[in-house]
Image 1 (tube, rainbow over the protein chains, first blue to last red):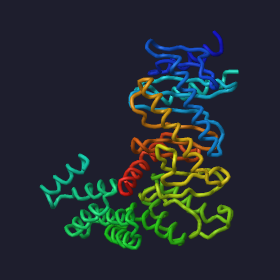
Image 2 (cartoon, rainbow over the protein chains, first blue to last red):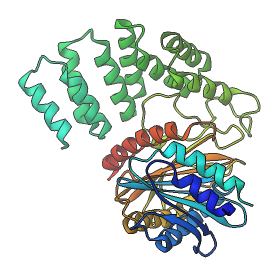
Image 3 (spheres, each protein chain N blue to C red):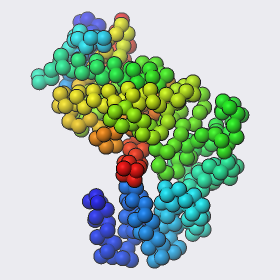
Image 4 (cartoon, helix red, strand yellow):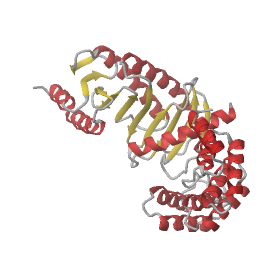
Length: 115
Length: 277
């Protein structure tokens, strides 16, 4: 199992997580994915990359370094993103009832292991 | 008129001697209907002149109205009937702090801390007051009365607050419209620069992106965006469909608590928008 696959496996085991992806932050393309049926990986990648880019600019304008974790919460679910090295972003799509605390911890751990 | 205000009004009309005026007055205050809240509180006090909670409520309303002398009197009255009334102690501490009387502010906050040692907001308020008067805390070396400071955990509209400058972005609250223009509040960078307008301009794009992402991924309506950064945590909520509220705190504050603070600030922002709309 590759590093990327191991990272996705670690995240998708969290209860309530419907899928995870490793994406390229610059162009929003999917590098690797592990998704449940019905989750459009390409859409998640493009949207998450765009949102993280926007927030990156906002934190930059605030005189802060780039985000280390982002959580967009909707009333029916969440998107989580953990930017890592080499422009990679680990993204997870979670249901409303997901264990978000555990998902965050696993994502930060997993993205830290990626070269 | 919201449902809770309608219900409370009906309850009070059916039972004028009930204590429903406390909830009704507070609900009206939170909605920014300060004149109505004032009348309700005054009516309650006329029935229950020795009820500390009623005077405490009146203090909050007068504080929101900008009648600080009146708020002081109301909170002092609340303490006369209940010397352990924490809301009144914090309110008076805030007023002393605003007036530059730091020892009196700290004394009231310490009394509040003795009564409820488990309330973390009191310790934070004490720390903020101390930092605001520390010799090296103000770049210009200004006096306490000149130093921008946030109310020490008193329940007044946070949208009017200004962050404490203590060497890093300790706190900032900023309300932004859908076009990326700042409506209220301040945001300082770690180097004390006012970055509010620059960040506000970026937030318009963030709001659009969040709306698009939530819709296309079936997340429903977006409610909040939490962002962790080494220098601080950011929390974004939308008090109304056309506005965003950004709350920034030191990264040592747990994100879930920052979320609670942001939600409370959003309620104040809604009330502020209604009163200034």
